[in-house]
Length: 150
Image 1 (cartoon, rainbow, N blue to C red):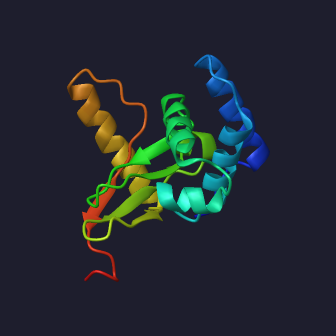
Image 2 (cartoon, rainbow, N blue to C red):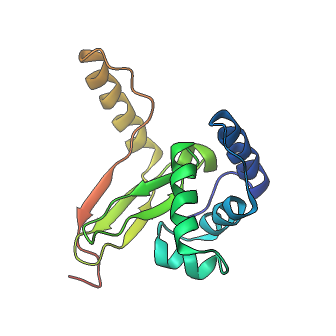
Image 3 (tube, rainbow, N blue to C red):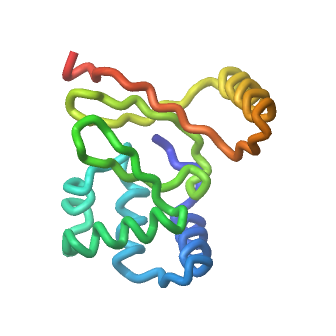
C-alpha cells in the first residue's frame, strides 16, 4: 500500500513521539521504522527480522513494544498467534483497513472509497455521541480466509 508521508516525515514523527515518551530514537528503532515503511503490508516478527538484518530478536521485540507504546507502530493480532506490525496510520498519513486470514494469519491492507469512509465516519460519530464517547479514529478488520486458504 502506498504510504502518504515521506520517510523523512515519518522519522520526524517517530522522534517526536519517542521524546514525548521519554525514549530515544536509537539506530535499531530507526531501522525498524524503515523496515516497516518499506513493507507492502503488516509484517510478522520473522519477516521484520529477515528484512532488518543484524537486529537481535529479543531487542527487536522490546523496540517494537517501545515504538507501539509511543504510537509509532500498530500491532495487529491475528488468528495464528503471531502479531503483525505496521507503522501507525496517523504517522504515515495513509488510512486503511485490514483483511485478516483466520487460517494463515496473513494481513492485507485495503482502502475503501472516500464515499464509504465518509459514511462510516458519520455513523461511528453518531454512535459515539449517543454514548457520550469522543471517538478519535477507526479501524476495521475484516476477518475471513485469504485466497490461498479458501
